[in-house]
Length: 257
Length: 289
Image 1 (cartoon, rainbow over the protein chains, first blue to last red):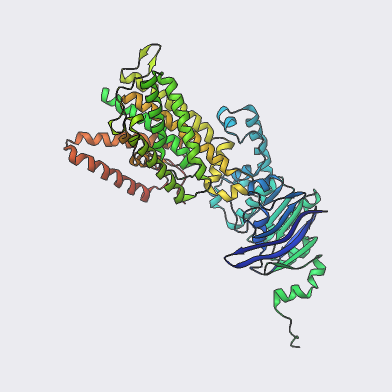
Image 2 (image 1 turned 90 degrees about the vertical axis):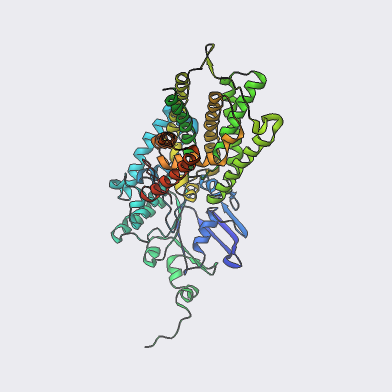
């Protein structure tokens, strides 16, 4: 079953067609990779799905809801969590606070709960603290919990952002280049996190340039070029696809030898 | 002695203003330059209620604060669409508008002639005539303000406010209804500024529009920045230092034609030095980005 359906989506920036009549679907409970050369519209597509950009045309449906023109926080509340290509943490807040912000609060984030320090708020805060620490452990960052986010290295910041998004307990995760800047020995750990999401029934759509990662982890691959989908299929199918090779390498020439 | 207490009363009123502006500017990161407008609304509301209808300052203070909060909602609304410098300009404009209304709606506010003879607060039938009694009253309100705002910022709610200051888009991406939080913050900030305005009016017993000029808004902003954005203690320090320090210049024995501009210059110099040496304020942690 498709959890997300994009139909004829387009986005123009001052006449430049970043996304141009794009249509594809994302299977529920699967890992889908979104690949394509630089400037092919992958991140723009992410921003369109999550409401950060308004599409010029087309439609995006999440399950049975048309989310095309919803505000980002509403789209999130339907169960779509994301990370950013250029990492968006809260720099002058601690790592722990960054994670806590991603967790669900039922009563705690209201004004009255804050002023009256309601027991339910305090209880929730306590529980979330445990959850946050557990999340930091999964990405190996528990010893940095009181560090300001701005003092972390690039790779560490990416790990914290991933942990924050994991904590949102969304149904559908959009991860924009989750592996970039990550210390190589951390990559298997991240891959297993993504696979765990799948085994717990979540859906993952991720942008990635590392083909080894893409082929290793994804069930399906969607290839963009110039804002259009040029191919979709299993990793094996994509590897053998002429159009994809053309997009990445240019037209194939006869080998020299 | 009387004079010293008077300065402390004024400092207390400014602490309330500074704390409430710090909630908006320092904790939530919304540049607001019209804070005194809320105090103006609070002051005029409770003064007019007392003068025209004989309503007790206690009730007037509450109604004044609610009126100011209402204006806060009005200011909060554009804050949803405007960011950074544009929001600063819009709030500045609002301060000017409120000032102009106070100055030109002569039928209601008596314009530049001001409102004399505003009654003082009374407790159990005793008017708070002595300055020390009024200082106690102001201290109570300072405590309430610091307590409430302190709790607001030190909570999951406050954490969301800081996240908006740090990165609004990231806050949206994890489902925070940023606009709602901004509106609440402006409303709460305006509410307490309204209280400060009312306390001022019933203390001085005379108000006119010249107490609520854009310069006052900027002075309060300076206190926030000076003490430290995003710091409750900083707001105390900022207001205390910047209220008491200029008073000390009075004793240098200069003619007032020299002292007044000199005070402004020293103010300015202090800020330039502070921004160069300690941009996060005296005890603040948060820096401008």
